[in-house]
Structures are given as C-alpha cells and as structure tokens.
Length: 156
Image (cartoon, rainbow, N blue to C red; front, side, top):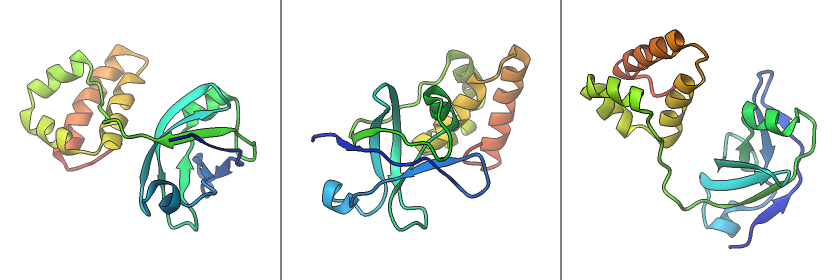
C-alpha cells in the first residue's frame, strides 16, 4: 500500500497537554475499517511513530501526537506537521527489560494480568519505569506497577 501523505495542524485536546491531528480521509475507504486502525507514521520526514487512528467522539479519525514526538519535532499546538502514514500490520510487542522481568518472576499473577493487557497499556507501564532518572525511582515504580496491576489498573 502506498503511504498516505497530508499536512494537518496540531490541535490541543481540551485544556490538557495532549495533542492530535485530524485524519482527513475515510478509514473505511482506505483501510476497510470504521474503528481503530493501527498505523506507522513519519512526521516531517524524520520522526517515526507507531500508533492508531481512532474515533474519539469526533467527526473524523484522529492520530494522537505524544509529547515526546512533539518535542523531537520542536512543534506545538497550532503548528503544521507533515504526516506520511500507512497501515501497520506487524504484531506489536513490548520489550520487557530484564530487571522488570525479574520482579514479574516474583509476581506471577501480576505478570499474567500484564500479558492480557493491550499493547498500549503494557507500553505505558514499561515506559514509565524506563523514564525514571534515578535507580531508586525505577525500583519504586516497579513495585508500584505490580501493586497497580494487581489492583486492576490497566495503565498509568
């Protein structure tokens, strides 16, 4: 499939620090799907991203633009961004760092619940742990993650 190219404006989601772009085409016509479409994208020709086009009580599908992507692009709300995207049919796998796997080995129930989660929720937990700047913070987050998973919390 040929990539789809468009240049939307980055929009702010409500009053929070969350951004998205509107997908100006029909997902049903392009992908045969009315609901979520997993995609790979390249922003401004050099920043790669894996995400999803989703209907979020909006007239059209939208593509979230995470803070780290906006930071790499040096862009914010109101700026234009070049988007090149195509459907992502590859399986999405979250790499679990060895130290996180060690804590899961001590908490089999938490690991089983984690394995049943969506790719996005798994990714959130692992990213939260990896973003810790101090070793103590990383260790505390691993323990907190186990507590949250056992309490039924799907994501951060």
